[in-house]
Image (cartoon, rainbow, N blue to C red; front, side, top):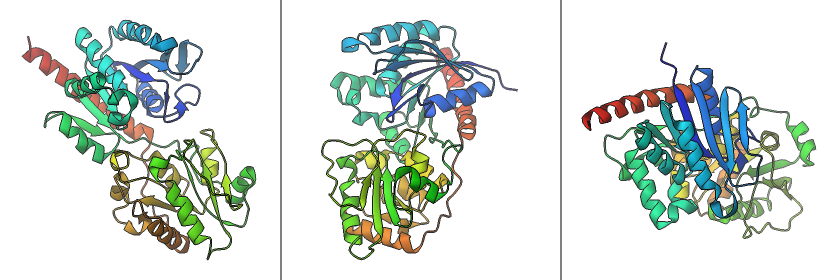
Length: 376
């Protein structure tokens, strides 16, 4: 049996439009729980950008301390001091969710001589902190000085090679899916919940409805298709920016912003699910979590031919449309209406991802030992 380690996690509390503790969501919740289930002693310090109750929270085997960012970011200093104190005696530090947490982890890790794994689950260069001149340089410093890196997609792992040594350890750990939530559910039951027409042909999307993700293409494609498919309806849900312009058509239904538990029910209302992305830095490097969620619900999907989607569906190119082209999107949706094949590969689960993470832990600890011996 492997040695049981003391692992500490640094992260922000809200990410991917969800709350780590309130919504019990995401990789910074699920991986620590899975590691704790393997016998490791796991704790974490998280920073909330919303006013939340501060203090100690237990989530399964994981002990979290939550702090608020406070007025003008005053809570960040308290967060660093708390993290510095709680990390003492740890065998490993895992940080992620934004560039600043990797920077803090690397600084504290060097002081305490604790190995650091920096999890880069998204393109942090595009986040607000990553665009600030000094923080951008510190972020790239943290990439180079971490003992190992974990990330979310093969395209982004290749991109990270630009900022670290050729022999740096970069491991892809996907976001797994809550299979207890995301599963096939009776379509008519779900449509009744949302008030959608029971016998209509429904296409739609759930997720960030941002202009930069070219959601407007879906509206254009729908309007084009609705001219020849008269019972076709479009449904949308998710956070949106002020630039979103929803056509005033009575067959377009807006479900608003959904809770995490409502998303699988929404997906199960669909005949075809659409994943919109632009061919830009974000689209090329991200891994759309909704892809795996749709697959687990066994709903036929259509996605943009960009980034990870081209790799996941390399054997199903007919499921992908050309980014920037509403005409291409309309054609692919029409094809999927006619052919609703869902021969999806099995999605990873959190236990499998935690087992993979264990191999990264072994590497990081051995790398720290080797580096320390060489430098003494």
